[in-house]
Length: 129
Image 1 (tube, helix red, strand yellow):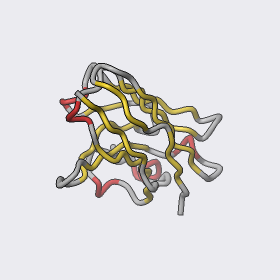
Image 2: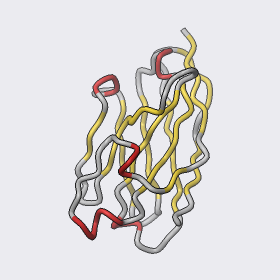
Image 3: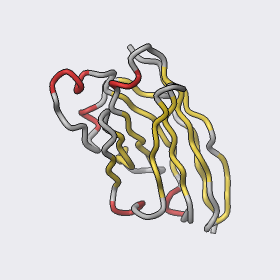
Image 4: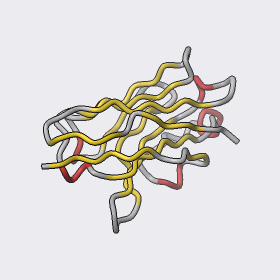
């Protein structure tokens, strides 16, 4: 099981920026596909961005052009740079990983929760108007 610890959440005004980070355990981080999800109050968990182990990225439509996901294999860290934040971005943000499972099978990890086996505890992002 991979341990994930998120940090970087906080409260900002609309138009502001935040950078989330997720530190992962394990010695084969380069084989992990990773993702950021979020859960807004009263809603289900939503996939925000993915970073496939081969470097491909994908984003949900509502954050395209505003959020950037990056992965530093040397530091076992996943990042989410969030710019031009909107009140509707307010949510608990979670880091997730497949733990390298899809590296063996060739499956392309998506924004579906089903593609990920390990989750962090979350970090809160609040955007005020």
